[in-house]
Image (cartoon, rainbow, N blue to C red):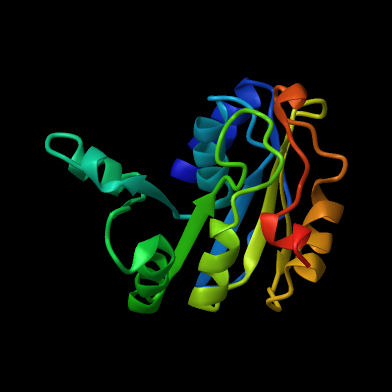
Amino acid sequence: MKQRLARWTLRLRGWRLAGSPPDLPKYLIVFAPHTCNWDFPLAMLAAAGFGIRLSWLGKHTIFRWPASWFLRRLGGIPVHRERHEGIVSQVAVSFAAADALVLGMTPEGTRSPTPYWKSGFYHMALAAGVPVLLASIDRPSKVISLGPVVPLCGDPCRDMEAVRAFYSDRRGIHPEKSGPIRLREEAGA
């Protein structure tokens, strides 16, 4: 019922879904390009429309009463930025503790152009030993797509080639706010 309602809501706004989720219990979804505040609700609707129980990271301070139960119900996972072990380790522990976990992230980290993507998604997937599923929003065609699953090898240059190939023709709601698809680690390679 939830899946049909999400698809209907997207269709009502002119959006359609393409692709299908992998038959894997654990993976990280990279959702890009992230150029607008509407990307989060569209991503949540798309995940529901694909039948994916999507989790996302939030600063632990937003998980307070009375909103805490609601945010967790929406898939929120609180993270503590100030903890010594760091967010990458916290996420790896969450993946290890779960039988099934699908974590969604926007690697641009902002809705403004930046010279590099945030590499947290990359390091989290490597540390957790999970593949990355590429997902895109394309405003010109009004299609939200699930693309290939990318098993990371640990070589950022090689891994990011597959990512760039998938996103090369995708345009966000505000394409002028997109930056290049690269990690800072690639500049030093």
